[in-house]
Length: 368
Image (tube, rainbow, N blue to C red; front, side):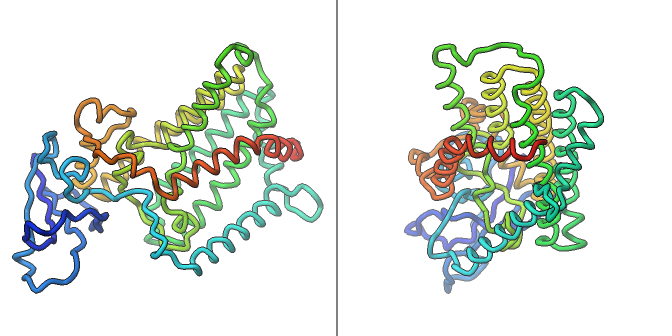
């Protein structure tokens, strides 16, 4: 099957390849041929008809003529991820972001975490209700993970329908306002009960294990948080969109969150080595494997053959598309990581490591 990509660019051998991320027209159906109109360059006197250049290629073609910026310099079908241009930022947007973040954390504290008479303490009531179902910490841990997974993936699956009813920003508030408290409860319960259950192995004193676990955790965060690509959308300051990323970490795996979660779970399970951690890891990995399938399904519905083209040159298993030759890394591939979002992940990951004692103290104070 072949795909047709419309490049709105003057016919000139002197014009450099168009490298910025195209604006894709969302697809609600799957057409028989893919024609994606890319954002035009600066206005030109050349007629629109003469500026449309058709580049026909098989989406399975792996040679240098493939229409991918990774090999030929031609425009991407998906978006260039982690792009952060300072000149495009508005101070007022980041002020709104800071205010919204502060309000969300305040509400979370008062409504969910605060067990004093001045707070609602709904988190404690939720944990107690789930804990009342079983005396086994393994079962409770697994139940908390399943509840979060059902709500999180369920709301994600209903996103298109929900946005049509209440709008993109309102649905993002609903999604975050429901998922965040459940995620916090699951994390706090894990921290407080991570050494409960049956000890299956003890490798914390083995040579090299600490270094291996630390390195695996550190790398996992580069996969876990692609949401840093669009923080203003996460906070609904900008209108939330469903993105079809194609560069950076996506060249390694199309589902970085799933890969990062698997790495995090394997590292913590190796280090702690008991039945509670094993239950938590089983629930989280299962949830993210489903999320990978569900994410592909939703992108296919939204973008049609544009997603098929991206899928053909990416892989779920890390590095598989690269090894098979379907993904050709550009010579300056490292530059796709020299961007502020990835640098922010590095700083936050180091902070999270050194803040472990604070996180543990805060969790123990909740008595969940």
